[in-house]
Image 1: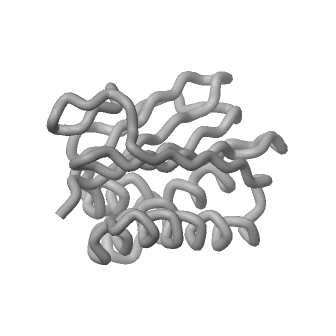
Image 2: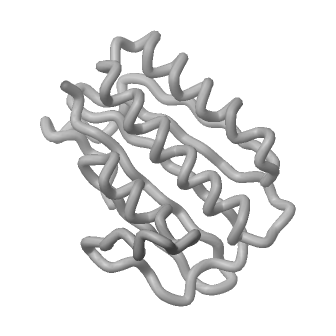
Length: 144
């Protein structure tokens, strides 16, 4: 997925990168960093809330499914008209990529909601992965 905002701007106005260990206790620090970074750059509250929720799901997937001790890389980029987040792990990767539109799992299912939730919280969503090469999830919102 090309990280270009709707105006064709190819470089972000503001960017922040961080790395966290693949442990659940560090996910809240990444969500707090996104909230502070976006708030400081006047991103609308609804966009911050949706991106923070999607980020939590992306991190939960990386922590649970990557099966690696390598850090998870997280990037936040603010363009004139979009806010983009990227979560990258160097884990086992996915054998099958998610479909274009993901239905929510059955009501009683306890797993399989992550990608569907991320997709519903964002205006754009992309997953790149290959077995053995890790996974990169890119998602974002158009600025309100």
